[in-house]
Amino acid sequence: MATYIVLLGPPGVGKGTQARILAETSKLAHISSGDLFRENIKNQTELGKQVKAILDKGELVPDDLTISMIRDRISKPDCELGAILDGFPRTPTQAEALDDMLAEFSDSEVNAVPYITAAESVLVERASGRWTCKAQGHIYHEKFNPPKQAGICDIDGSEVYQREDDKVETVTKRIRVYFEQTMPLVEHYEVAGKLIKIDGTQPVEQVTKELLAALKI
Ligand code: AP5
Ligand code: MG
Image (cartoon, rainbow, N blue to C red; front, side, top):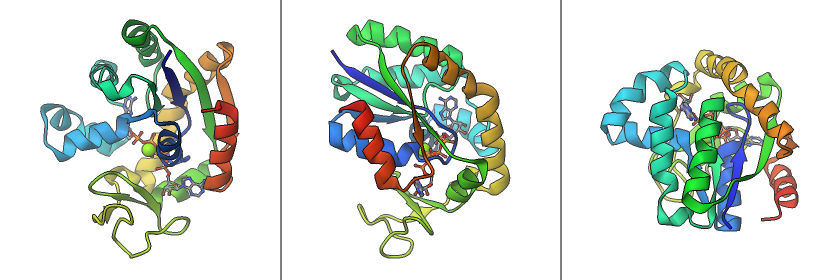
């Protein structure tokens, strides 16, 4: 049976940072909806053209576009053992669609939902100081995790850049959107007995340690 883990938490809390580490440790695939949208924007695909302005404004992409992109990704052979889902689902409709696709593709379901939290001031400081690698989306922070050589990704040597939606006012908007549209999922997964609360204000290594202990992957 495949293992599917949904990482839930507000913008900038560390989902991408942790998802990359967990995927490497567990050999599960890492599926980041935000990374997939940014990849489409970079490659100027039809989907990329449709969603660019939405991401830049810090709003959510419509459910139908998001669900069909994830459906496509999750049906790939590297997801056979399961996946760490980072940024999806983000609305009740997306959560329902996820249940349907997991049942259809691998007769499985969401196993666990770590819910990583931090105060809004921490989120804004993290997102606004974030630097992302152009080639593969590796994540840095100017203060908490700077690249060894300024402006260059340690892992693949590509340039690092600041995301368009990481301006303070856009981050604040994204946090508001999160509270309005994604918070219902916290209750949904809590009622289902799948929610695992994790204090995201701790250092990266400590958050990873708690995730690994709780998930047993
Ligand atoms: P997405 O890319 O998913 O952004 P997000 O959810 O807003 O989350 P972030 O990527 O900003 O933060 P993160 O939690 O991954 O933190 P990170 O590890 O990078 O989505 C972007 C946009 O795409 C959305 O606004 C929407 O438009 C669209 N979209 C995506 N999914 C969608 C969906 N399902 N439906 C509709 N639309 C969708 O860490 C942040 C920073 O903090 C980094 O600099 C990192 O180095 C640092 N850091 C991390 N952990 C720690 C720590 N423990 N201590 C100190 N620093 C830390
Ligand atoms: Mg992310």
